[in-house]
Image (cartoon, rainbow, N blue to C red):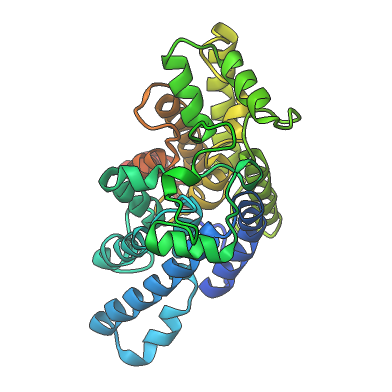
Amino acid sequence: MAFWIASSPHNHNQTETSALMRLVIYALFPGIFAQWYFFGWGNVIHITLAITTVLLCEFIALSLRSNTKHIRKQLFDGSAILTAILLGICLPAVAPWWISVIGAAFAILVVKQLYGGLGHNPFNPAMAAYVMLLISFPVQMTSWQPPLSLMSIDLGFTNTLTTIFTGFTNEGYSVEQLRTNIDGFTMATPLDTLKTSINLGYTALETIQNSLYSNDMDLSLGFAFGWEWVNIAFLIGGLILIAKKGIAWQTPVSFLLSLFVCSFIAYSLSPDTNASTLFHWVTGGCMLGAFFILTDPVTGATSVKGRLIMGAFAGLLVYLIRTFGGYPDGIAFAVLLCNMTAPLIDQYTRPRTYGHDIDSDKG
């Protein structure tokens, strides 16, 4: 979920919540299209399942908590739908249907409504649900398929739908067989492949070259198997949001700069065991997290200095988790850790009230 507000009393945004949510959803379209182009219909199906689930859960929760005449406006303010879309984007394309249903229900009922609804949740619902699913169902949440161009099995809409609901294609192939590319090697995300290869004693350059040449991939942007274009698409959407003043620029710029500094220093000191900055920027959920998740002021910092600090902290956390942690990406974990620190960051970075000196503010 994302809910953009301005830090009062200096700036006021009178745009309705629903209009802001629609703007963010529209900005996600380039990234969703890129996912569909490279990985098929899976994420679109999961987004649809998640939207259906969140609307049902939101209706149930609001019916128990609110006056019925206000339910329709709250139900369709776009916040729940945006949560569902963000969650559906993050799920593996051929994950079973119940993964998106459980995650969407958890995001709305536990992370959002249990804390009082929109604007009161301390954690980002989509990322909290993603982490819950990743810890609870690690096998299903790591069943990433290769891009369609590397698959030996035709995975159209019907085949994808059948696989998501039954675990097998119409021809009887399992999810594990779908993950095996034409060379007989089970595919993983670029971040996971790099981490595993380095732990096995390969250098970063050897891993990238072996993966590229064995799969006859385009060398223009590097070893990312289509993920680079997905990230570029989300970057375009994020820049549109900044241009439309839907989000503040400080958080994504600070995040990307922090990740750049950390990865550049590490790569300069040891290029054999560390990936380049470009690799970190164009793999995993980097751009999605930078522009669409960290920018939520309900669960993030709201002051200008606070946004800069939180973005830099998130970039550091992502690099540390990707390099030393047990999970290959780390965006979701970094977001939740930043959500915990946001109130403290705001406490020490919020602007002083006009006419008050520092001593009176402390008092």
